[in-house]
Length: 308
Ligand code: GFB
Image (cartoon, rainbow, N blue to C red; front, side):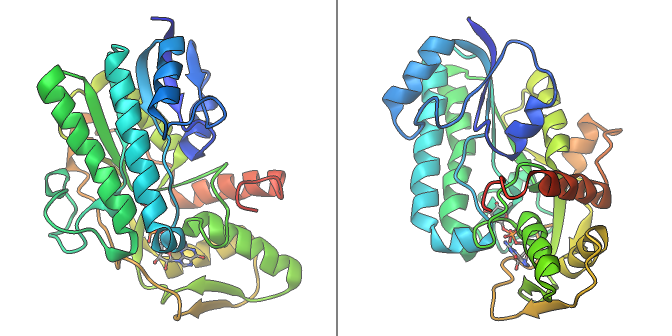
């Protein structure tokens, strides 16, 4: 082996958080290093770097808006990247690989709270079916490779991730980065802050740094063939989120809910029992504290942020 750890998708949210953790003998790769939708490019990278372990973060992701528009692109690119990375890792003799789904890939109609064993018990929410089915195949491919070739591939299922270096696009971003960006513009222009939907949907959020800490722990300690949900299990309404964010950004204008825009899934509460069994004392960053960190990063880097 030449490299201890390879991190794909290193230009993204969790990649940024991992870079802050002073990891030794680690290669952070982005689309500049290899086109993971091409097997030749992917396997060449693995041959050169010969990693012992892999954190596979690379994915084509987006919020509700992006998913509703780009279902074909999200399906195609994610399926191709995942197939190529897991296969190239197998051929390169990688000892351990962790990849990621998200709680939006669970069935839209299923018993709550969402449990890892329910993953395939029905279709995902129509708003992100392309992404969701592509991501579910990560769990299938990991299990199939473990079954036939004894690959130690594990899968984590974070809830909605947010944090510094997110995609702050007003159209394709997730709710927190989009609202930070839109709130900043509303403050500058003296306008109201317009949000999508009713404000009633509930979401759980996890700060990217918490995902990074959990990922490094899982890489060293988790070897089950079943995926594991990463969430505090604390739900907040989009209305409460917006009110907290407005307070953090000292926005004094009105919050307007544009109900012509979709709500997406009403809620997706996570069953956190498995994570608690492994890490009963893990401390998640409280939402307000995470929002303060993310807003500070945004204001320090704007407009040189993704999606500006
Ligand atoms: O973050 P978001 O796009 O992802 O939307 P999902 C969360 C909630 O925020 C929805 C509301 O109920 C939106 O209606 N919302 C309010 C907004 N204002 C905005 C806004 O300006 N932008 C956005 N984006 N939402 C995603 C999946 O679903 O979950 C992804 O589409 C991914 O594939 C992610 O897996 C974890 O939670 O609805």
